[in-house]
Length: 116
Image (tube, rainbow, N blue to C red; front, side, top):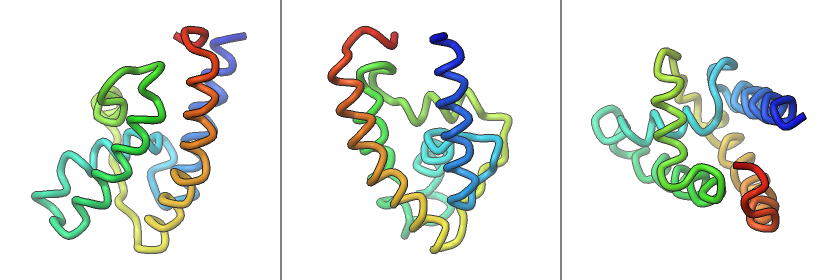
């Protein structure tokens, strides 16, 4: 049951990434990890945006993944092609992070050790 729940969460994450203009085969975390790592060299204006999203997602998933969740997700999914997306797509991505990260973060902190 635990594996099924994990697979379902990844599928929902990939759906959210696709809805936000990203590659439907990668997760939001991997996309954020990728662009936060390369933003300085590709688009320095957006670097703070990606780093802020990374901080929010990393904080959310710290209880189950420790530090660096987004970069770990990117390296685990490094064979993918990541799409930065348009301004609208990044707005949707930001909305998803702002809506779901606080809820997920609270849940993960209420059930410590149960999801590892």
